[in-house]
Length: 274
Image 1 (cartoon, one colour):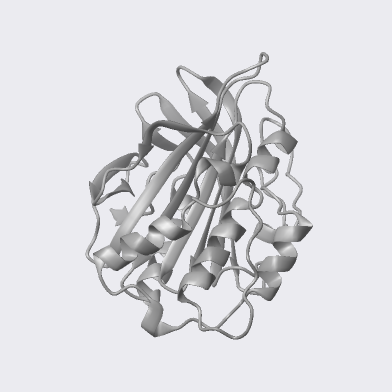
Image 2: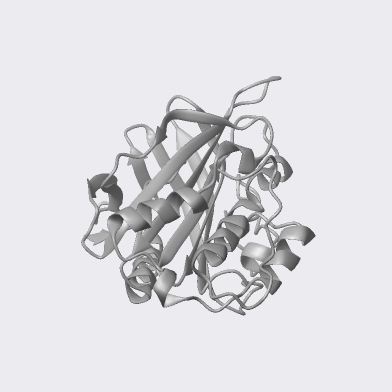
């Protein structure tokens, strides 16, 4: 059983530009195109690649938690109308593990990770449309190599488990993944980027609805976002919620632990940072 990222929420994927470029979906049946960032976020991310300063990287759990609080998204980063879900934050010292049976379970944080936090959000149901579920996760590892291993394990697990059970009555189906190193597929924000698309299905919320997840590594930090659609929600509507969130969180990482090489762009946010 391999360990994985913190708990995420809950199509075919065509070759695409990844996190910062457009991408078209591979067909019907609820499949969806991964989110695309706006020109503002794309240009900022492309220019904001300072050298990382080892002296500024967290060395203790307390330092890691402080970094996470400065980096992770709040509801305002997703845009207006996004609310805190209940529960809002994950339990300290725990993250989710994907078992060989493709079922997610909470386990203690492994020794190579200093701290992790997942926040859950929602767009409430309104106007005949169903609720949308969103998440943001940031994990700080002891070393950049540890962070890279998490990313590699996640790709392997996603390839092995194209259908996953998040919790009783909630499933992810038809999962397909793509991975991009820095400079590949439009990835200019992270050392490595992993994209996943599929559908989310719930015994209570219905479905299948479009599901997107993206996770990037920057030195010892791993950050990710996800969205699970709802009844009547268009792909364009979902894309507008998540397109810029991960690039902005990665810019915050650069600002916190990057070595100064001149002015560092400040990411534009919808209402400020968390």
